[in-house]
Amino acid sequence: METTREKLIRATFDEVFSHGYQGASLADILAKAGVHKGSMYHFFANKKEMALAAIEETILKKNLEKYSYVETYTSGLLEAFYTQLKDTSVRDFKRGCPIANVVQEMSNIDEEFNTLMKSIYGAFRANIKAIFDKAIEVGEMKPCDTTKLALFTTSTIEGAILAAKASGNAQDYSDVIEELIAHIEGKR
Image 1 (tube, rainbow, N blue to C red):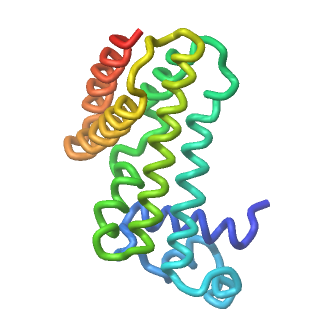
Image 2 (image 1 turned 180 degrees about the horizontal axis):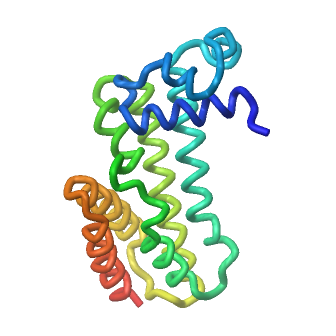
C-alpha cells in the first residue's frame, strides 16, 4: 500500500511533468494524492522541497530501472541496450523528457533545481558510459572514448524525444534511435 509520502511524490512528479514546476498547482497535487495540506507539511516544508524530492526520487528510480542490467550482463549488453532504447512504451512523447523539461524551465532561475538537474543528468550520462565501458570489457565494442560516446548518446536520446514531442510523431524518435544505433554499431 502506498504511503502518504509516496502519494505526494507520485502526484507531485506527475503535476510537474505535465505542467512544469511553475505551472504545478499545490491544490491539484494534494487532490491527486488525496492528502490534506497539513499532511504534506509533515513531510515537506513547501511545494519546492516536495517537487525537488519528487523529481530526484522518480527520475533516479526510472533511470536505475532502465539501466541497472549493465552490471549483470556478460554478453548481449548492446542488444539489451538497443532493445531498451527502441521501447517507445516507456517514453511519453506528449509531455517529453522530464529531465529536459525541468532543465529548460528551472535551471537558469533556481540554483537548487540547477544543481539537482546537473546531478540527475550526470547520473544518466554515467549510466550510459557504464554500459559502453562494460561492452568494451566483455568484447562487444572496440575501445573508444566512452565519455564522449555517452555524451553523444544522451544528447541524441534527448533530441529524439524532443523531436517526437514537437512533431507529435513517435516515428521521429524511432528514426533517430535507429541512426544512433548505427553509429554505436560502428564502434564494434
